[in-house]
Image (cartoon, rainbow over all chains, first blue to last red):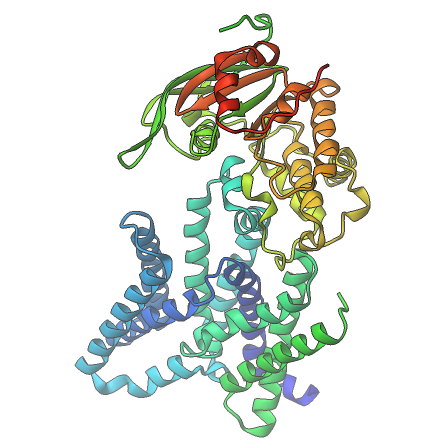
Length: 269
Length: 255
């Protein structure tokens, strides 16, 4: 393990992965309790169009994906609030449009199929130092905002009407949460890939929620599972020559099923 | 209509308020005021618009006509939400698996509006403890709320509503699903908040029986305002007789 830490590529993967995992876990607890667990999956499909656009225009795919992701988050909120479309329907419509646009862009130029493969399936061990810093700054910002609005998010997730009656601007916070999700999906795509990013958002948090008796414990347990999944996933992937993305997600799934066993057998928390 | 304690200040002023759900009228030109120190029961049959009126007062619904002033400000401009506590109707129907402790639920009440100076962490925990002791649940502060009985959960929501020491507390059908023995304890607690702490209380209920014993004012709603006055005069009013003939069960109490 010590030898492993001397490799620059491994250090970069570890730093970026841990920060992104923390952002995913914190956000995931709120998304699951709001019955919005699939929003990450939907946004990932839309962000695919952003990545394709970035590659087509020869700009950094992370930046294009970020712009498309945030716009998509706003569009989903707008469909829900202004057009009166149900939340899951809005996600389904926008994700289908996003993926369709992505396919069209890819068909215009088939020169970047290999690059796109990395974004779809994750490629954390090839992450460069610019991407590491960008991931750390963005994930740090997501963490900061969630911690700043932690109680407000908790209040409106638990009892939306009372939160409104307490003067909390729940619609603004809904939009903020969706934008944070879009940013986190963009960050997660390098770690586990767009196709598996919703797993990182949902599975560690679902494991934490199985065992927690209060919100703080749910957040702490979810973060612990997410971080451990990334660290163990990277180590196993390196030594067993497995793809890191699949390994990370499967380890988080093991934690999830363990949490069910622990909950059934003995409530430790 | 009857005379009130005119020297107490008006906290809520409902002025010619109407509300429609689509084309269905729910409230029709309702006007009355809630004054400081009142313990008011907002009563009426099912579908009479009680909860709708409460939601317009709290800014959750926008009236189609009329104005609501809260502490002198039109509701749209009101900012000092810490002056208002609210216990929703659905409080007894929470998700039992939601991982939130009693202390965390009560702590949510500290978010109501901006109160300066913001309490320190130490003062915050004192406020939480005090609110929980008022409702007699200080020993259960670390319990997950889903593990409590319906009556205990309702008390947690009251603790959340009073943690910021509001001037007025609104409760929407607070004893729905709560057993009769807990009712008495519950209304005694509201009595204490009203008389000892000076908190104005507005209780939305269809239980006419409780109004004689506990409340000082009655507002009877049936889309429009049928009656507003003291409880003793309400008992002699036509509105009361009409409610009785509507099959409502009344338990009469004397002070």
